[in-house]
Image 1: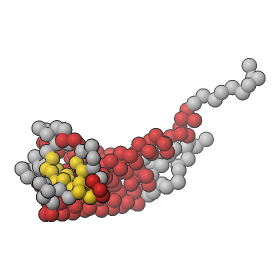
Image 2: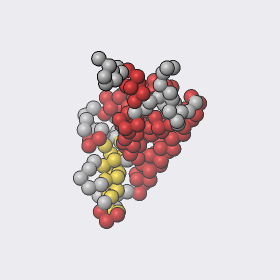
Image 3: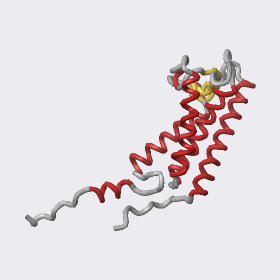
Image 4: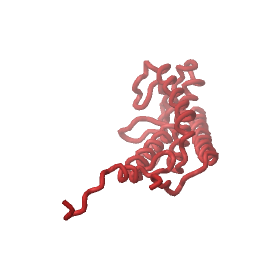
Length: 190
């Protein structure tokens, strides 16, 4: 046996980079554009309520992470974002060939870049910038498009690892487990 066979949906290195960077650029542009629109048109004191109360456009400037955790560690969060961006670009994406993983990495890039940009260019200062959040659903944190991209990247990655069981290059990890497992002796052969 020559090892596990690649699964369908395997891309060339160039195609994987193009797809991931394309998704990342579109997601980043949508995130940045919606934040600019939110800053220009939303009144934090009078948030619009949409969809019968299911969605509120509540503009906030968040110095922390999800659920406003780590508000006193904005610089640390910025440096973690820079490290995550470097890790995706330098280690994960060069190894990615599976279309699902490529989409996940594109979404992750969009999310990291969107919130990192806020931390770098928004007030009060570079590395201390507050992230612009404005989507609010009942009983949940206020978030933005970058957060949506990160969430869908996480869902995609979990799906690929747990359900589909495919690695970055498109090889089934199910087959690796089957190859590594010892063969059971047929009944009657003692």
